[in-house]
Image (tube, rainbow, N blue to C red; front, side, top):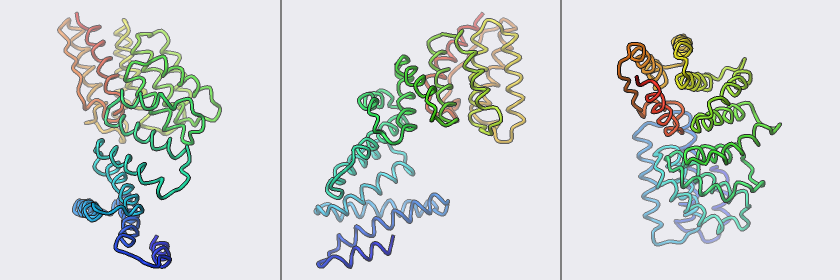
Length: 322
């Protein structure tokens, strides 16, 4: 990166401070994010880098040096995506990149433009702005040129489920499942999303075959996070049935599985959820009032589906109330 920066500067006959600033912004961003990914950045260094970006923005306030603005926009976009996780600041940075990129890259490909759109939609999902994400992605869903289908389609499925567009989500899920090019982790995501759609629509009779396919798909895999979420779904589904004896058996099986896994934190939301269901079951057998409340901590791993957890837990609460 330094070598190319020197070559770029040496090719400019009349250099100015902004040419140097552009090179520095690019090199420092590369260095910063590499070290941060390696865990070599402390809190003070992260803050110093952000202040450096703000200082560069101030220097450029009266300038239209296109390359400097473009690299500064990229740096802000990376910072807010990976460090601050500020949705509004990230979306603003993406808009800045889109503004300055055509001045730097004369022919911006449709794939690049679409990637910006999907990146924004993904950030909206992270910020739980599902309606905005759904609206953004609905307009480009049919465009087959998109080069990153996992991010594209998964983001749409999440936003569709959380906005009640179950038919659209199921249609896309069925297309992905039938695609021979899908990776196992993508098919696992699709099956788990399909279970969410079916449970939210109270189509309980269609759920067991999906669990069977999931278990077959994941047999022999060492994906603890997927296995954990599948077991959580299985347990919640069992509580929606009328057979509480079976529900108790499944709850006991999955609680014991979690206790044996060192990878599963017993203070995690999922483990707390199982313990809460256990207490509710005791109340149910004793014909005592059940008060199963939704808690944000329950989405410790499956962070994108708070509305799913909330809805299902409310239904369990109603089902188990004497």
